[in-house]
Image 1 (cartoon, each protein chain N blue to C red):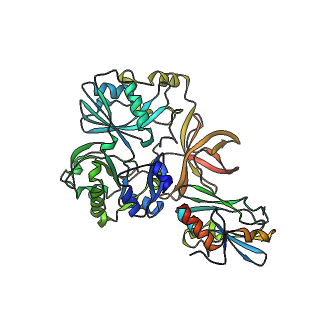
Image 2 (cartoon, rainbow over the protein chains, first blue to last red):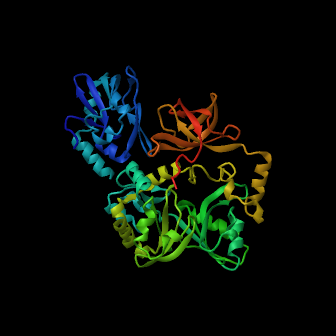
Image 3 (cartoon, rainbow over the protein chains, first blue to last red):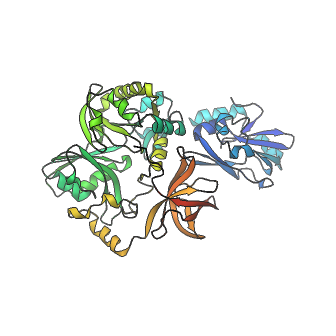
Length: 127
Length: 367
């Protein structure tokens, strides 16, 4: 369920690092908790975001949920397709429905994030 | 679920868990917010039929020779004008004209009125009514004796009809009757909070699980779905119905909320009357208006509304509308601006997003 090559936050984001680029998304647990996702608000390309700072939001029918950047860096790309098909976040949150790519400014942050096992344990304990 | 133990639960709570519902804290009650998904459940109610557990709602009963007098003194609508077997929407007000609660009043007989009130307001309502009881009546908070199920949607009546010998086609909208549902005594009311046809039934808690399952089985041929409070909210919002704590609360009078029609000044004295007359004479300052988003974004409860660049009001409810495929909402605006067609901006995370005021209800069923 939770890919081994991702790192996770307690706020239910994931990051996958390829070289100096981190791809960011929300976890399957997050989309389940949110329910039908109807709107995704992402930062502009070029925005610098610090780890833990707000990096847009995801809205379900019921509520708004902030996205927090799992790592610091500059946004290099956003998943524009989500503007018209936000429901993809419910269907494929770990794949097609990634949110944004960030050029890492502090790559050491990544190792402090949760592993797949740690994240899974964390959400089990939350239940 | 250690944290959940402090929450109150309806007798159907284990059934919701078994169905895989997502449970949330709703005003101190652990209630299903969704089963299959809010949009899916919403569409089931608009197109066929949905079943809601609304047992968290409270019941208060007024009995005695002057039951009608008390009902008319504490609530704004004209209860004594109801016929036995008829119900209406009404308001309980404070002396200053703000809402204690919004309620449904059912007249069972000349000496018995049955009120359906909001879950988290029931103790407050009960105390409020008792304080005003200078009549020959008894007031009882009887919530524990009832489970309330809402069977809503164009196929709602047909679903319930399979479980009762009462001819439901004879029960007009906002009328009710007592009879048997699946072999158990029930009060069947042709009422609802979805803007769709359907019934709300009141049954004994011991029968709740069995009747819940019988309703689901009866509705299977129509594609019935169990529905949570999430869909209940989007349905009522499309129908332009108020929700306590959003459109109405202690600081809002019925005149502002567009609920003048539940206030009957021709019936004698009632709690809040003087204040409402004062408000009416001095001019109503703000009014509820419908809005539709033009720009991207969803208006949510509490967001500020700007008119011509100036803060002018606030959003009371907002959501995507699954039926209209539009982001809709309700907001308070200065009374002289609260008319359809006014360009407004909703502040969404510090960004003004264009919207326009529109007529309500957003959705009205065909028949």
